[in-house]
Length: 375
Image (tube, rainbow, N blue to C red; front, top):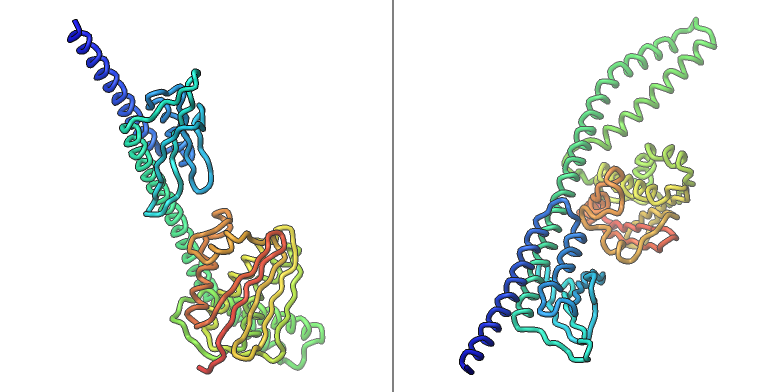
């Protein structure tokens, strides 16, 4: 009789253990199914995973689960904290990003259940699954963003090619207009009114030719050509296309250019690009208007060029990432996330240094220091 009772107890224990394993396998199956759903956001996937963990525990009515990821908590809809717990670290690309915890609360009689070794192993397996989900989603999001940035860059390259082609097409008839206007202007028997009108035609044609010259300078793709440049002139020429846009956006413009006319050794088109990127960045930071300051100063061992705005400013976290490629806080139609990283690359290639100082709600200032040397 005792043997039969012992056998029955043993069989009941085996059955209970099998039921626990079935719950664990079902949990892992559900996690695998959730992780493969492409339409779900990463946080929604993690929330669903956390919500099904308690059901896999030996005492699901007392269990709760919580994921702490990068300082943010995702909890199950059951009990989220208790005096008994097991945990597993979340590592993504060898970096500890957080912790996965499962809690048990005490029974109604005050007793505290304990976790089985199998449950601890299950939690470690789930933590690895969560790490893989985060890693895969990060790669997918990065690739998606990269593809969009590449498409955007391709559109910009196409626009640059079109702009250069259009500029060449316009130059020929523009030269003809100027030539005939100058011939008329040289006639001696024309009235004063005609002379004034031809003067206006010549002036307008010269202005159009200057616009085309600057457009071609900005859009050209040639190897860097570092020569001695007047920094004030480079800034003034490069700002030409942006000045009216600033005025339309109610941005006050201040130019504090050193009258000593500081000279640097640099590639003109690349310095144009630096100036344009920094000014456009400042304009985006001042959607409701503000003040934009362009400053140059001849220092003892360097030349300073700074762009300051009174816009939204940046947090310390954003400020630490502004030069990382593809990092942007703007909508996709407002920026590629490449502008400031390109600026950093250009300044570095010129053996210069760029620094940013910014306060949230106060504005930002980018200071660039060029070496003083000869070509």
